[in-house]
Length: 483
Ligand SMILES: NC(=O)c1ccc[n+]([C@@H]2O[C@H](COP(=O)([O-])OP(=O)(O)OC[C@H]3O[C@@H](n4cnc5c(N)ncnc54)[C@H](O)[C@@H]3O)[C@@H](O)[C@H]2O)c1
Ligand SMILES: O=C[C@H](O)CS(=O)(=O)O
Image (cartoon, rainbow, N blue to C red; front, side, top):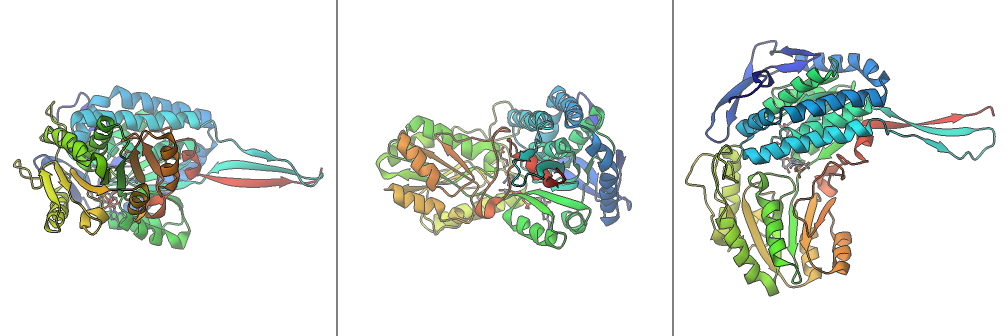
């Protein structure tokens, strides 16, 4: 990996402003999903190192909290500027350890930086309230205060954005944080820590621990010093972390799994609906929590829509993320390929028809063919699981009531999409869909200015937006008497 600034490629954990190895010297290997070649190594920390990081976060908290929001924002602005200045190196590190095409990785770094920019501005806006008193001898006030030491555990599919989406609001709020990035993509998080240190984030305020998720997770959730856990990952692990956090009653932000319906009504603008579905489904080779997972197309426009879709899917280019014309990289590992193939073969065995793809790619390794299936029914596994791969699963529907029932029959509640030219239907369907995020005539909707998060079993809380800072703050009510 040829970086302009090789110092950004860090192979140590970052605790209390120091780059460090595991106490016992153990390491974990990081590989390139394109060809399983070695990318680097990181320490595999134990419980003692985790406690050291939590203690550093606690020790540094008082001075960080005492800074004004504006002063914290000025340090975050320097971090934002350094991320933008080093975007090419950060994108190259990201593509090398995660596999997504360089152009997408570049876009992710911009997206990651946008969360730093948003929250450095929000840092000076944690307003309180003066409440009109109900007794003449009293005055009532509400102030917002940082919750304290936070822990963050993130997923590999957005190695940079998922880090800044948590660290930026935590630091802006006046909290300190201990981050455990995924073992698949630790170098992106460590590079962000390197730039945060250069920006002037004090020692102990932002710590990055690499190593066994179970060991680190147990320490972070059990620690009474950690007052907040923010997790991005599967619903199954989210449930486990909730359980582990219960004894210390932590404040939780959970960004969990999705199972997005994508509905094309008979009055949809078809070319826009095709483009929106391609963008939603094949971003990161289908490995995003908000990818279209179940596609419902009205019977009246079904053949025309599927023909247009077939042409687009057939033109997707699979290969190395470093090849310019490639728009579909490898999946993260062989287990991911096995899962996607299991879902496709199950669907075919139960009557689905393969229109495009339908099997492991000739490139071998972690590659899977961009796939288009029709004749999908809700009894098939892929209708009830997150595919997390480049597979479009299409079903036909005939009425709005029928498709809303099908779309909502799901424990997930993260994102949903639909295309229609009817203004009244836009509001009727938006209000009826049981999801935290709804795209109406839009297939990619995420933004730092909008609240990102799910309902039902897709999580708790929101990231980004004017709501995001509150995830890291507590409200305090003060009643002043004696007037
Ligand atoms: N809602 C969102 O914003 C969002 C964003 C990205 C991914 N996701 C979801 O994440 C899943 C894919 O990511 P994944 O495979 O990394 O999920 P995962 O839940 O397997 O892992 C997520 C993180 O948790 C760690 N982890 C695993 N087991 C743990 C344990 N017992 N204790 C502590 N940490 C543990 C992992 O090492 C990783 O860092 C999908 O379900 C996807 O929808 C959701
Ligand atoms: O899947 C992870 C991300 O949250 C998706 S997005 O880039 O924020 O849409």
